[in-house]
Image (cartoon, rainbow, N blue to C red; front, side, top):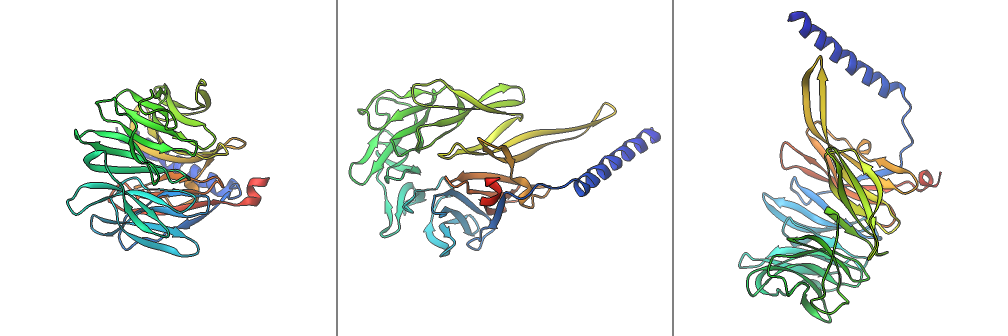
Amino acid sequence: MRKRRYLIVLCCAAALLALVLTRWLWPQPDPMFTVTILPSLGGNFTLPCAINDRGQIAGFSEVSRSTYHLFLWDRQKGMQDLGLVCNDLVDINSAGQIVGTMRDSNGQARAFLWDPPGGRVMLPTLGGENARGHAINNLGQVVGAAQTDAGVLHAFVWDPASGIRDLTPSISAETRAWSINDVGHVIIFGAGGPALLDINDDVGAAAQPISARGLIEINNTGNAAGIVRAGPRAVDVVVWREDTAAKTLFQVEADGVGTLRMNEVGQMAFTQTDRSRLGLLGRRIFAANRKKTFLWDPNRGPVPLDRYVSVGRTDELWVTDLNNHGCIVGAVQSTKDSRSQGVLFEPIPERWEK
């Protein structure tokens, strides 16, 4: 028994030494990105949620224990504190308008729009007490979920000219709108799964069911992307347009994909989960979930992002958004405590031209 344990330790040490020598001797590829660590608003948790094509980043940051403020960051003005916000979805459009959710004086969740010239404007509900803002397009149209007078959350769209509109008035169950593009296509989630709805159609028009499950993303070219289970430890990332069949772009060998974002040039940023297993002499020595984060480019395939930041044994890198210039925002989060640090990846132009 003692000899067996000694053999196990010796093999592990040899494997570790081989890994160290490989990383030292093997030439590292040229960096494809520069990295900026975003500041906080004083607390230990900062999460950048969205980035526009002007490089403006919106998200939320802890200012004191369990108290979060909305922030807007860019290279010209740095970190701007825009006041109270829930630790929930935040989105920003090309005009710098931000949509999010905050608590009112009665403790109810309320959707709001923050506009650079006018500041914060509270959005109406559908007759109930609560509303949450999820996304905004470049026309200033906001989607989310709001309570009806019957107390049921329904997907809504709002704009300054038309006000708020229930996108699923004939459905009695809960529905939520998660994203909207500039054409007016909205991704809605309900009991039947995700569906695609055109807000330019008549009220009550049926939404088109989407075969993919889980993560759904839609861009301004009319392409939508999602994931489909392809096996016990694999998922297909698929893309489709309205009234067309889904097309598989690539397969991810993983237990799941945690985030998926797509821009208008076909790039996708995603975080996948691998169930790492290490065995020796018929015994499982180690098993753990491991996050891996990539930018998938139509010409280059998957480009790993983890090597650009310091990710410790108890840390994970997540991506939250990317813009049409290939800039990516995300966060390094600790699995041990509530620490989260915002990070910005910016592509190095000359590297991508090669």
